[in-house]
Image 1 (tube, rainbow, N blue to C red):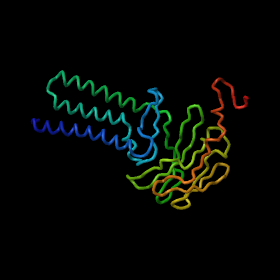
Image 2 (cartoon, rainbow, N blue to C red):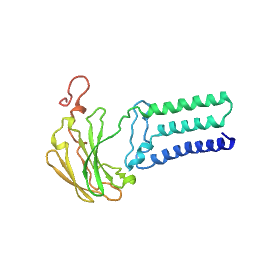
Image 3 (spheres, rainbow, N blue to C red):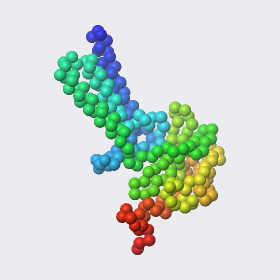
Image 4 (cartoon, rainbow, N blue to C red):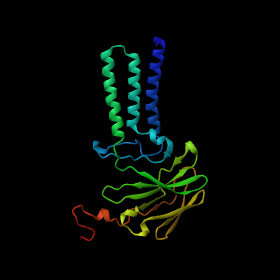
Length: 237
């Protein structure tokens, strides 16, 4: 390989590393919730609060994945640019450790992360999807969010249209999601398992709900009433 080609390949790899970091920053600023990974107080229980924004940018928003990719590209550039064997070995060792740590940490389950469950209603321009929101000392919940149908430019609402208790929570049908259907491009009919129905209006540009439904805040939750010692504290004074 000629010195000129080696130099241009090195510059190209470093440029790709910078681009990987830039894409991660852009993806993290799309939507709401800031970083796709944060650990409050430096603890081991991490959460993924990211909501809304462009759906297909989300896989690129994880900071640790961006770090791992950038580290690998820098290592490849060092292989081409650094001729001193010890210096090259040292830099390879550092970048390998950084890349491995980033990949391993990115695969650790995140506390508070929502998981898309199913598409529950569709229209020509929108679809309504359900998310499972795991509880820590409470039952899981079901969040309903709007998504646009724009191909690679598809977006999701920052705010949920509705929150229901998960079926496994043991709550009554009045607190469980039943079904949904689009009435037109700006309104959805949502029904609980007991048949109670709400008409939810939403902004077709921002996808934000005008009158969201909350069947979680006041719902009876057996899991939240359980004190963890083998007794139910819901009837205590």
